[in-house]
Length: 115
Length: 311
Image (cartoon, rainbow over all chains, first blue to last red; front, top):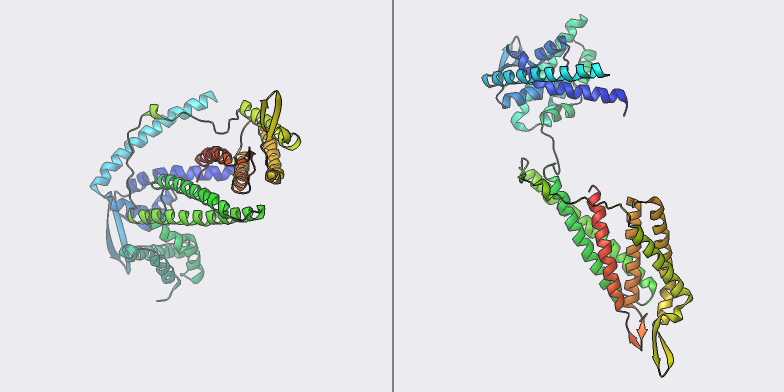
């Protein structure tokens, strides 16, 4: 397989691995799907609709998000925000993330020194 | 309203379960309209057909969007697959055993010429192919129904003991001594039956005189060209495997074909005119013992090949 394709797939998997953390972290204030996509894109975290919308539904069915339909102007939009259970999970995920960053930092710095 | 957006939303919705359809349709519609407004503002012109096409293309094919909302669908999922694979092997082995038995019966009942035997074998092989496909279809159907009825089946993981693991058996390792002996014995058989057939039989000494009774009947020599063919093939295969140093999938299958070919010839010999006679008594039935031995070897090799292969 082409090296670039392999790299692209690995990067995609890495991003997929953190997507729940990313989404939960941004829903402290309520957002509808498209506004969340834009918000993430502004922070260099491009997520496509095909990934985000099903994920929002899944997180809601798991009780980590809450949602409600509201009509703004002439358009109904579904607004999502993090639930109480979601906040607990987010806290744990942040802890995991910090641990990962620390471990990876140590691993990668060690590799840099030895290579 | 028949707009491209509505067509797209309907196309996605049609592929979703009714329970979640309207909710997802509304969300996709609203998201598409948001994206359009955004793009129009970015470019600085009103929404037009080209813009709609661009946004819909970005969203992706409706079936892909719909699929992203649905759990992955399997005919037989990964949890059931190991059991399916095991049952499949068992069923195919039973079908093969029954077919082999059918082959023996069919050959016993067939006409006297070798052509009749070949026709019986071909018919039985065709029957095996049909039975195997039917068995495969039935097992797949049963497992597909199980998958449909129990989509979240939980396979109980037994507590396991690493010491209970089976010893590793290298199915491709060759036994040099066995192959050399087999080759030498086959060469011996070719020489004996082709050039010294008069020595195959019983020798007895009475009153100081040696007497000899030949074991081979004229019917035996009708089969000799076929036996020579299989012996030469066996020698060539053994030499090839010895040179390679290991069995390979292709050589395993060649050995299977050789055994099958051998069984067919021996069954024909055992069921036709007597090929071995001792003191006017037909002893051709001894061939069934040889057929049984070859059959057991064949079953073991097939088992080893199928276990090594991914079904």
